[in-house]
Length: 112
Image (cartoon, rainbow, N blue to C red; front, top):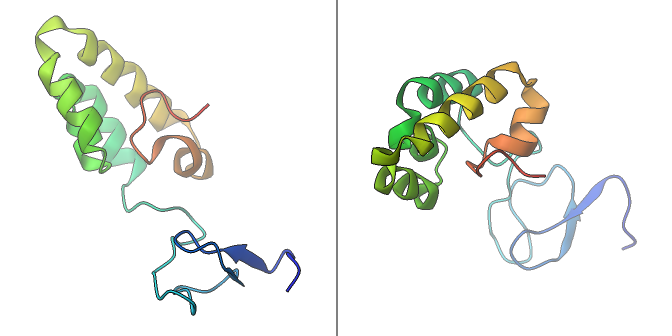
């Protein structure tokens, strides 16, 4: 099967599958949805980042435990709070597709 606009590759085994497939027929692993691999809501994440960003609440909400713990360990410096305010504003002004693409995974300042 040649790669076309109606196909994608399985996240687990790399087998070429239908673009709309929810589960890979080869390995049985559920595939991320086309809209993104997250259940986080950008408004909730943005508000958490602004209000509780210093504690990493938005990172925990987005499922990025590693960065959440990092923010929590350094909250006393005030730097995570500053990052949280900046990230919260960026999340709230971005459109839904940009949020899903860059910020929904909980990376610091999004994917570049």
